[in-house]
Amino acid sequence: MRSNQEKLQVYFELTKQNFFDSSSLTKMSERIHAPAKKRAVYPGSFDPITSGHVDIIQRGLKIFDEILVAVVENPKKKSLFTTKERMNMIQDFFVDHKDIEVKAFDGLLVEFAKNNNANIVIRGLRAISDFEYEFQMALMNRKLDPEIETLFMMPNLSYSFLSSKLVKEIFMLGGGLTDLVPGQVEKKLREKFRKSTQA
Ligand code: ADP
Image 1 (cartoon, rainbow, N blue to C red):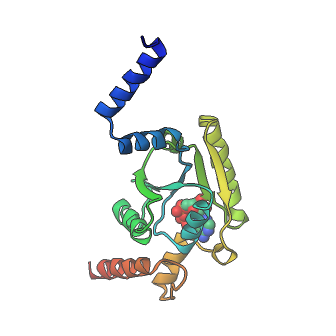
Image 2: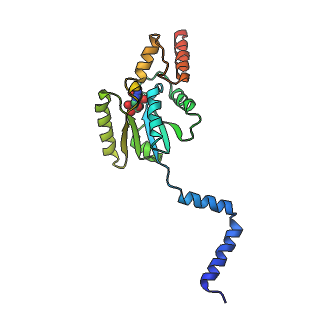
């Protein structure tokens, strides 16, 4: 006569054999025991992405398993590149990175972060001039959602003067962009300005 415990054990073994092969059981157990991925959002206009942005993303990957680059879609703010073009340039640069995702967003950043399973926002800090605006934004976001933290990162010193705006200005004045933007971006700038001068 089997005890209840033995019966349960037999039942479990039978169920296991009938419904699962061992590999699906292993996968299920890995999923249950795998630690949750550390995910952060890095929002910005990225009009276009510069080496400063790339530097911050690469630093972020030392801390987080995944970074979601959130490209701001703001119809009121005039950008040189469309949202799709800005996203494509980032995706092209990080094409081999499974840990980088690129999405467009509008509306509240804290809502976007929460809807995308991230509770950390990464921001880059250049010179002192960034500080006041970033300070206001971080505290406002904290007020809107105390669960979301903002993490500031400093780029390599050689990028701490670099902005998308400056890149566009240098390009228009005929200056070289070597090391300031990914190579593809310089190509896209050339295409963009060729088109706009033809139009
Ligand atoms: P920009 O201010 O150049 O238009 P974004 O709005 O795309 O850039 O900025 C997104 C985030 O990246 C912001 O937190 C901004 O401070 C940061 N950032 C932009 N350029 C740099 C840089 N050269 N070094 C470090 N952080 C930067």
